[in-house]
Amino acid sequence: LPDGVNISKEARSAISRAASVFVLYATSCANNFAMKGKRKTLNAGDVLSAMEEMEFQRFVAPLKESLEVYRREQKGKKEARKDKDKKADSDEQDKSREEENDDDDERMEEEEQNDEEEVDN
Image 1 (spheres, rainbow, N blue to C red):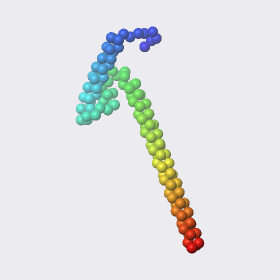
Image 2: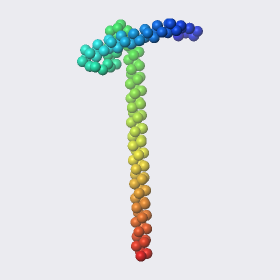
Image 3: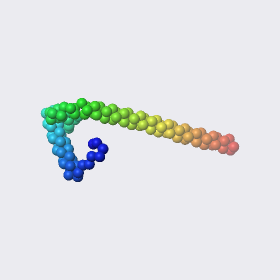
Image 4: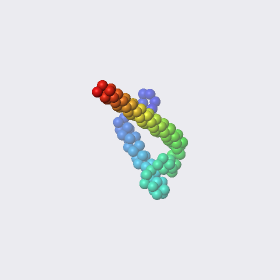
């Protein structure tokens, strides 16, 4: 909105209700596409098809762009999570190896002490 524009509570409420009705209508149209595809789950293609059927073609291109951005972000997050998990696994393996080495060192020291005690006896 331009600077200095005020919106009354009544107008905000009307816009909110109109947005809710639009979302319900878009969902209903998208659901019809899913049912035609014998699916129970709506997908992005269903929503884009619904926008075209509802004669909102001018929103299809921006929605596709937003969807691509979203998918790239999710892919990046997924890869970052995988890298983080791999690093955590690697760190855990390193720690486990260190603990094993420490245990081996302690056993060797005990054996050496036992050997020295046997020699003394």
